[in-house]
Image 1 (cartoon, rainbow, N blue to C red):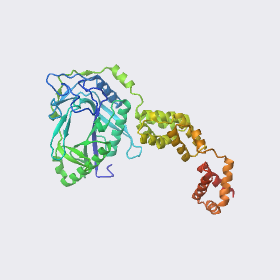
Image 2: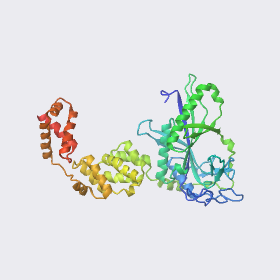
Image 3: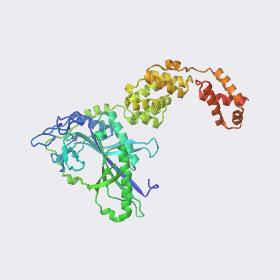
Image 4: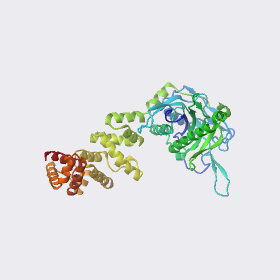
Length: 491
């Protein structure tokens, strides 16, 4: 990093994940997305005097599951705290969260990049703690109107806030971390991580360590908000790094006098903008929540939840690569599609006996159909057995790959087996002796191509392959090329 640009970029992320529960963190109100405003509320979540919260045990168990998958330490006792601040969508005037005794801390998540933009590294998790969400402010920005309304349906929604160490060094690493974290949480069934519905929100703390003859000089930390996609996170961090470096060059030492600030990301302008000065923990006046008892966790509960995690994405990728000989890129694509597709791939690879071929057909043909039809692998019309039979025929040379893809397209449309469709299309194996006779005939009819091949210009064989395909569409181009080159040596 330091050899490529005059500063080191330092990034830490705060990820708020909505837990997959039917009710809120401290009351029985539903968490369903899209309900009419203020229809999923009660005296507890709108902060009516005298109402008392009761912890959602399911939310705590889901948070524990995520924390263990992130290799966090789990204390045997954790407590709740009040985070005090005043905002229109926070009816109580405080948020129930966790401060000095969070339910987990000191974990990590390994990230890698199949494209090789950065080396595999472990990103530290400072803490993962539970809290309730605030409501939502809605501003009417139509011309001639200046109305603001509050929807408290989200108030009290259970969140797991995952805070990383400042270990990320590039926008690409930040995006990779978020992608891997989302995948992990999906596999665990902890959250749907739908950013469009607010189930996953990201804030990024970013600053630079500028290289100077006196040593690295840090710029003030900026928290960037309002990023509604992982791509937006990547773009916002790249913009903010350049903005901070430009500011440092203009102000020099005086930049150290600039306070920490919070900036928003404007997707339309592709730029960050100043919102307010950044709060410190002391600004929130944390104190223990008096209406909730501390939560205790036994060794047996931790062991039970850890045993329920199942095979997580990272070890699953490693197993697929080791067992079926596929590349890290292939395993990454397959695992990112979800466990159901991985199971389809495993069954296909076992039946056709070629993991690489199975991965290629899934990525090039199966996924295209799933995306076009917007369906899951469970509704893919071609069974594992039928696709394995087709791949086996291609590998055996009974049909060449391009025509095999035509056969699969018809299998998808009709549901018929490969053999029946091949017969209907007039596709049948070409006897090797007949193919040799065809190649000899083509060589005799093309003396110039023969001369080129003898002179070492091997690309000329492509002309013979094209002629062979016209004479018999069932020929295997690779076999035609091989036979022609062998026969030329005998001439």
